[in-house]
Length: 297
Image (cartoon, rainbow, N blue to C red; front, side, top):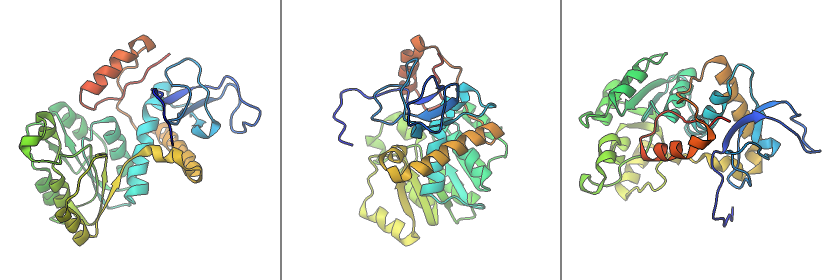
């Protein structure tokens, strides 16, 4: 995008009321309730009282959906759709492994997979997360508690699928190196890349959030023998192509529709005021991924 900037907008998932529109705007009028995601090259951040946004980045917010739900779910909804529908070809009956299912993205991905008739396995990074996941309905096929460091994700998945492996993996990061070269926290909660390769079934899709993933020739050979694929989850690519804009708006609309009908039930923290936003952001970056934090004006 050739964006040589020192500063980038933060708080880009927004929900609010249209105050005014330009002369060429056709989708909205003043007073409309809208939700959307500002692009990376937006001149305005979402953390302000008035935002200028192109109409192609917004959709109408359903009346049944609260402001907090709209702003807190739109990004993860787009990411879940991108991962499961466009990158992994989700279909009824597929086995899906969602790593860290109690995270904001993991929760929406599980609910989307269940809605499409898939069978879902997930990992939990704490006893609290495990309790939350076991309480979800429809129920998961299995919840693997990795907080103790004793659970074997690959063995559990192969056991649950009768040795066939899973069709789709959505990770939350992976370990790339040996035990001696990884931080203790990452070592405990994340599977090694070889575990993912082992539990992936024939013709499977591995959707990764690990932007620096390194696959050695034996790893590639394993994927080749299985006819499996690796895809990188980067939801920003929607904003890089005008051809994709129509699909992107359809995804945004469908995310809001599923929120309104109760298919998506996001895991959100209590909203914070603007003056608390910085502290909330620092806490979110330092701690593990959990409930989505929304700033409310």
